[in-house]
Image (cartoon, rainbow, N blue to C red; front, side, top):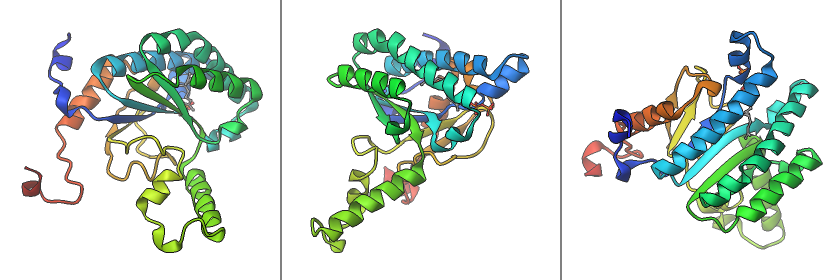
Length: 247
Ligand code: FPP
């Protein structure tokens, strides 16, 4: 075990880590390579990060893999990302099973190309009984779209007298989000030096700790995740209270 890793306090690990994986394109540009290769290298970081998170004992890892806004990228890049998704899902199924990792997806996944949609559902179905760790891929995901969808579903229930307006509370909203079975985000990491949330888990990150690193996603390795976790363990999470109330 490396020195940094041994400093982690197991009892204070975040339950749910979410990552905005950014910088694939810039990584490729820096090396004089096509953007596509940045995404390929980024897929390797995904594999390594999932493995590390599982080994460290994190229960939930959510990765922002494709946003609703990413549909506006050039078609060739979208095709590359979708093909990479398909090949990674095929390649990683065995590892997911071996390590008891459940794969789930959040987002408007019906918008994915048929082949990607089918492959994704196949892996979700095959891993649904796994219990050690939940890996969530945010695909065709946008938090505003998620909230609009939830509001419409709730409004329909009110209209059909299934619930009354007075019954609506935070848990009603939670139950209508893609993330209904996931806990709130504890630690939100964004790579590549950008200091934005980019329409990612707006509701679920209300009390998340944020960690920004200049490391580009394809360079993100175990030691970077450990650094983020150590930083998280130095934070005082007050949830609106004062320090003295936390003891
Ligand atoms: C952001 O980099 C990254 C993405 C839009 C896609 C993330 C995809 C992967 C890591 C690859 C495969 C994923 C899975 C789940 C197998 P960017 O292209 O916005 O980089 P830039 O800001 O430097 O241009």
